[in-house]
Structure formats: structure tokens, C-alpha cells
Image (cartoon, rainbow, N blue to C red; front, side, top):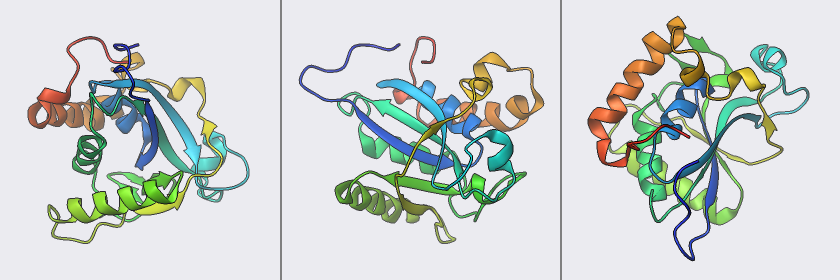
Length: 187
């Protein structure tokens, strides 16, 4: 676990999807102020297992639940990192991962959060020539992904997906967002 929450500031939890959850999970674990990261399935119906979600018939997205201290990591910074470490202009696809389960999405738990996410998308659009297709979806039931998907990159760095897909994203994070990267071990 990271440092204790700032005095009098409640932690926040957001659920974001950016393609395969292994990538965003690995990025979020490296950010200062992040206290908990959990790979999850949400946004659909029916079974929430890896096998079922991979069929593309459940409507669930591979997502990441991120609990953070907004006084250490402002939400706006988290959203900027989210948009800069995946392609939010690619519909239902991130690289070789194709299907609705790999969509770019922000799952809101209140109308205030929906407005905050919409503003983040509008601000991020300034940095992309193509339209952002990140969806705004109400947060429904969140299902924790299987244990083997939690902190996958740290546990299995030798896997080709980690070396060729996640490692470059981590390098990009360190190069462009170094002031927000933890100096200690990821969560």
C-alpha cells in the first residue's frame, strides 16, 4: 500500500476502461496517490468471467477500479494520463485487442461524475485529430476479475504482451508523467 490518505480528504474511486485491463492496471499502480487498483469487468450483463467476456457477448468491458487520494493525484491528472496512455479514438479496439470488451470507457457513479468525465473528454479532444470515442456509461455492478489478472504485469513481466505492449506504455508514463510516478514499488 502507498502512503496514508491526506488528512480530511476522502479517497475517490473511479472505474475506467482503456483496452486490456493489464495495461491500465500496471499504469495506475505506478501513480503517486493511488491506494488500490483492481482489474474488473463492468458495463454488461450475464457472466463476468474472462472466458465469457472474451466472447464479446456479455457487454462487459475489461476495466480498472482505481482508488486514489485526489490531494496527491488530482483527478484531472489521472484523466490526462488515462487519455495519453491508450488510443481513445479507436472504437472497440486497442492494438491487437479487438471487441467491445476492449472499449475506451469511463463509468460514472453520479451525474456530477458524469459531468466531470464529459469535461475530461472535451479537454482531451484538443490533443487528438480524430474524434474521441470514449463512452460515458453508468457504473453498474462491478465484478472483480480473476486473481491471475490482478497486477499481471508485475507478476508476469516475461510474457510477450507485457514486453511489447505494456512496457512501452510504462516508458511513456515515466517520460511524460515522471512527477506523478511513485518512487517505491507499485501498489
